[in-house]
Length: 177
Ligand code: SME
Image (cartoon, rainbow, N blue to C red; front, side, top):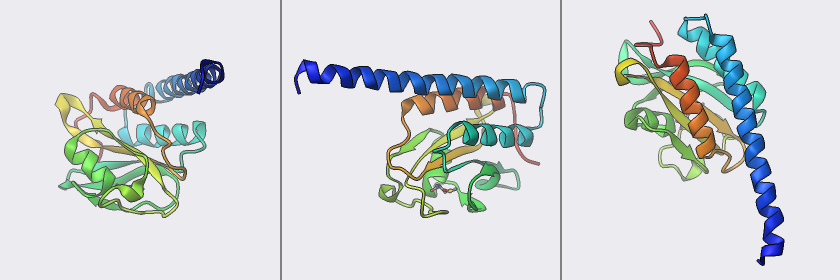
């Protein structure tokens, strides 16, 4: 490809990236405004799941799995938007359980290529899972976002989600109970 045909592609890619960043700026500002003054973590999680799902219509499933204080090696379903989610996920199982066990964000372009992926809804084809880290680095749960298209999520999504979750839950010691 010569420089003349590449340039419009680069310009278009930059415009798409800027639109995406702008959507994330708006999402983060909206979330901050809504949860400010509301200390209950379940209310925060429900509002975040709702606002993300509304702002990004290509998010097919958006929700939280929380560390269960009664069974600390399991995640239990929290507030979400989307079709019926699995109720429990052991640490280390599926994308959510792996992100929880390894405490790191996982971007999965094709869930069918991920060993042990838990298919709650066969229409999900890609996902991002971000750990929710509370006070003194304790793991509170994960935020799971699925899409029906492949390869939807990237480092920009990861950065914004990590920032939003840290602002919303960074001072908490537990989410449930
Ligand atoms: N995708 C998850 C399971 C949860 S549902 O998709 C809502 C996983 O493999 O961990």
